Image (cartoon, rainbow over all chains, first blue to last red; front, side, top):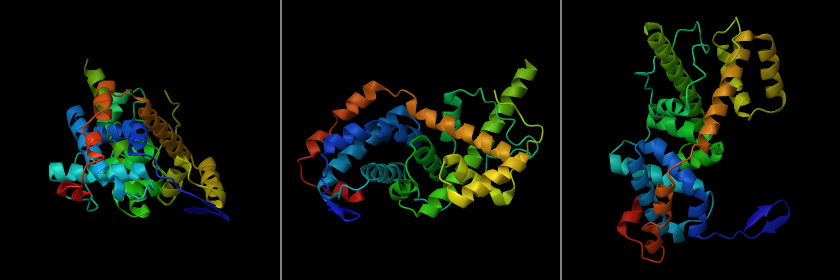
Length: 183
Length: 95
């Protein structure tokens, strides 16, 4: 039962199939950004759904998207032998551009695939925060549940991810400009 | 293409957090007023805010990128269906 003010509303848990119908596209998009390769993403989502189906009776029904993403993230770390989420200070390959020309170097004509590639190049923790918050537009609370970290950590990773993405896009735009000048 | 401001540059360090929250729409009340008032008279912060809003618009648009319907169909009818009525096994302990 959930209480909203003085009213008590009975909570009914939807069926697992209904959850899959509702969340599958989101899950697959997130998996594409997490695993990067389409076939790996499909395997990852398939395994996630299998694990989730087996655990469905134990799930309380709150934040199903976060729950599924948390399972997927754990499975990703399990499959790929990744270390779980110590805060990272990875800057290699993401050199900040000079302060002069802070944003303007970004080529706003970058197509979606280039932006996607820039996202894929972000370190795991930052990439997940960015994808869940800024692409999937999940709330900080949902993302915190999905990543199993405090909200403050979500926010700091997100802000850092945006800075890294911006730096990456700036560098990409600069490289393309240089190539165009050489042609 | 965005019109560039002649005074483009980094935002004020102490404002970046507020500007990020304003761009994502999570800033309210006095904090929002303060961020917008600052951006209105600080060219660097205004530009930062404009560019960040535009980046977020582009990221939101990625949601509409079509994914493989074949993959989604396969997943929709995947092995999880037969697991729904099955017993838990040790593999599910990973959750």
